[in-house]
Length: 456
Image 1: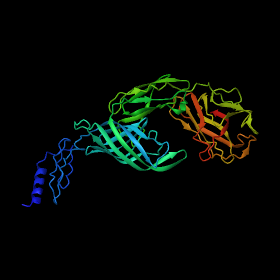
Image 2: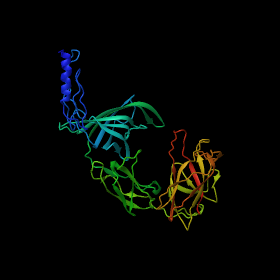
Image 3: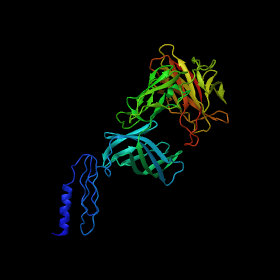
Image 4: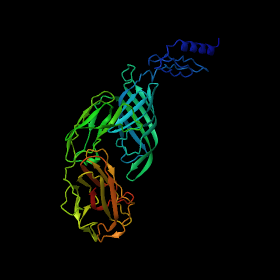
């Protein structure tokens, strides 16, 4: 019989004689000119291909493998480091990223320091195959690091057949890199290596002498189990609410916590926590975290149009009779807020007062570029709603001269109103600058003259 025919027959016998199939295994690759080995059992390597020559070429036998070369990879948690290169090279771009990774069922979850993402995943041929996975950026000044398909191969370093490391590479062809107020597109390549997660997750909060309207935010160093409980104890006891900080949210994982209530002024709190990460390691508090505290209570402001002694006001502010040739908005005095300053006012309800009202004039350094917009918020201590206030009508450009060289232009009078429906005696009003830099589209923070502050 022709040698070629014998080769085919022998190859067929070899294939049929191989071990039983298993859902954990996949067929081994065929040798050059040979047949594929059979599927291995429970993740072990299958038998070698026949390696029989066809067309007179010597065939190299290749063992079939359940998984990546016989490496078994199941669900689990890993610590990942990625070495980053950019083409063309970008100044100040990150050199590496790192994050925790967990595969549970058909979901892969990645996260680091309050940022968490998830995506669908399959375990295929000894590798995690994730699709449309966004990575935590860390210090990378990129708009987004989104990998369309990431294949993390299991690596068996000790020869026991189980993956004890992961490796992968990914190339992102169009990454928008942000630099100041501009940006550019570049190709980003990342070489990943991962080891089993053996690190203890930590909670951190740096929230000393804070504005209560900013709320408490506590972040975990990696995703933790949804059963994790974090509580503020001290001036009051307040359980914090878990947030998944993920879209779409993975089931059973959270990475941040926040207060659902507006805390009182002059308070101090400690963090207490109980929980674990997705690998089962107990949660700890970051040793660098300081006690949480709110701004000192400046007393209570009694609405009088800022005509009397100033009280209940915290921040860099003072009462003035006018600025340049511009008089106080109402009465003899108005409250003055410098361009770079911020303000917090503590008011107290007398009965069912819920309508907060005040007026403003913005003073600018440049005519036609006055930016009276600031971040104006109000809320009731003990409540859950922080209300953002906007003027009743569009902000007018500066149109009147002040006679002062520092801020030579002033805008019209703006009215601000808010309805505060939540129960509670103490009301807080906060005014601070929005994100605004001199070089950014000509944006310049303005000074404010404030008056007629009432709670009715």
